Image (tube, rainbow, N blue to C red; front, side):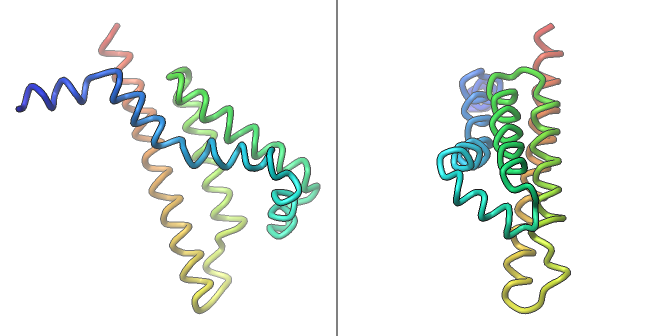
Amino acid sequence: MKRFIENALESNGLWIIARLFLLVIFIASGLAKLIDFEGSLAEMRAAGLHPDWLFNIASAVVLISGSLLILFDRLVWLGAGMLAVFLFLTIVIVHTFWHFSGEYAKISLYFALEHTTVIGGLIITAIASHLRKKRQA
């Protein structure tokens, strides 16, 4: 059983699946910003970001290109860094729970905590990619 688990954890297939699962939300969000452009512009305006079209396109580019770097296991540290900075800025700009009270503050806090957790996952992914490549060399 131990050998089976070791083989699974070292397999390229599981490595691809893990990266894909991590990236589903980023890819979906990036594509949504392009497919529902008007709706995404409204989100940018609601967050106080102007010009809305520039922030929407920049967000889509960061979400999709960062995801592709990780998905194809190329410059994973860069892709993870791009997405981590995006999430951090989302916390600071949108999920400002410290400015609110009541239920809205609680929901914003939960989003901020989720984003923080995903940032940790992105860092772990960059470390794992680095170590896997180092091990193969």
